[in-house]
Image 1 (cartoon, rainbow, N blue to C red):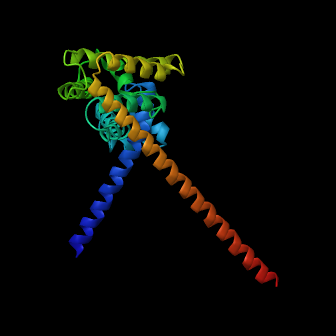
Image 2: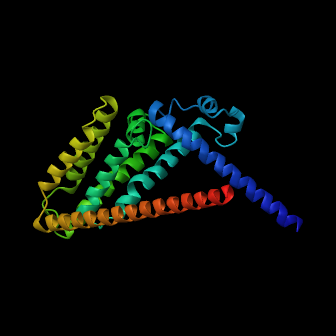
Image 3: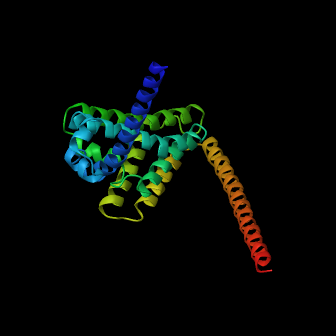
Length: 261
């Protein structure tokens, strides 16, 4: 019994430690997106979190370990905010556009304080060899390759012209989104995101086939239908809420009448 209690205490300790580490990384990732990974020191983070440096060292033994953990946390957020929603769309041209649209939306919503985390850190570390640069490069490359994979698939099912150069198209689409982030962050250009969407649409239209156009039209119809269903549900929920509040208010009024009587 004693051994079981000790194990439980240890599990709670680990759980608390993981929670604290996650909370530290949530703050660190926003600082790094705006001020750079190099500006993210143990001391800077300790001040922001009102923690001791020794407490932070218990979670991250070195500055590089902290930087790598922050990149890992940024990746998890990117997957949640961009990749997972895009994966709900059917494969091919629609998923390709969903990936780009979710990425642009994430930039526009400023999920990270400094815009797209990976663009900011890529510029910061593009000429600095080491583990940090290698991880940023690997994650950034995998995103471009994901575009190319979806382009290849769209070509294989006849949605895009088979003569289109997949690597070149992926490069151009990625570049349009990068420029949107650049203009949105540096120039505070409110139109940058929509300009990128327009450019992406133009580039896709240059190589889409009749099959691809039908797929886009069908996907658009489904989205409209889903939005209508969502609107009806929100309306029904709001109506139920109003009825509940009215019934509650009526009950209070009856109670007051009884008390006054």
